[in-house]
Image 1 (cartoon, rainbow, N blue to C red):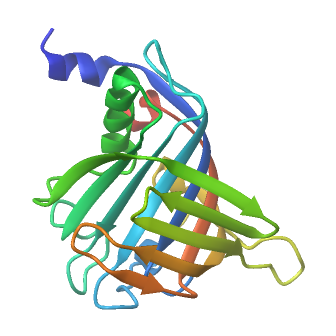
Image 2 (image 1 turned 45 degrees about the vertical axis):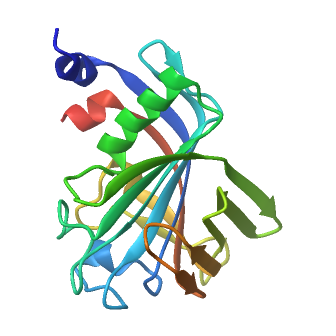
Image 3 (image 1 turned 30 degrees about the horizontal axis):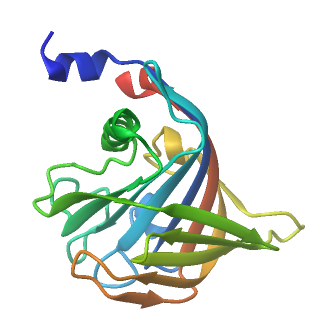
Length: 211
C-alpha cells in the first residue's frame, strides 16, 4: 500500500496530560467564538504522553508540542491553513520510529501541519517540573511557560466542559493563568504574563479522529 494509506490505517492510542497556554486573557476566547485578546493569538499545546503506542511503536514517557500564531483578528479555529507559522517540537529522546509516530499523531491531534506555509519540525528536550501549584514547562532553549490553576468559587479548580466545537483533546480541561510565557523561535519574541493557561488529561485514539 502507498505510504500515505498505510499511515492513515495505523491504529494508535495515547494517554497523558495536556499543558496549553496562549497570549489571550483567560478563559480562551477562541473556544467561545470571540476574537483574540491581542491582535493575534499566539499559543502552544504540549502533550505529555504517559502511555501510548502508534501501531507497534511504544510512546510511553515521550512528549510533543506545537507553537503557532493566528493571523490578525482571527481565531485559531477560523484560520486553519492560514496560521502565520506552525512549529512542531518533538521530544529528542524519541528514536527515529517514535519521532515519525509523534509527528503523525501531532498532525491529527494538534493539528500542526495544517497547510501553513511556515511549518517546521524541531527535535528538542521537552521537560516539565511541578513545584507546588506551578507547572513549569520548557521546550529546549527556545520556550518556557509556567501555569497555575484558577480556583473555583467553592474551592477546587475551575473546569471548562464541552466548549463549542471542542475536539476530543479539549472536551474538558481545568482553567488557569500563566505566571510567565516566553518564546524565542520562528521569528517570534513573546514575553507575556497572566495569560490563558489550560491543563487537561486525555485518552485519545485513532478511531476517535477517524469519525
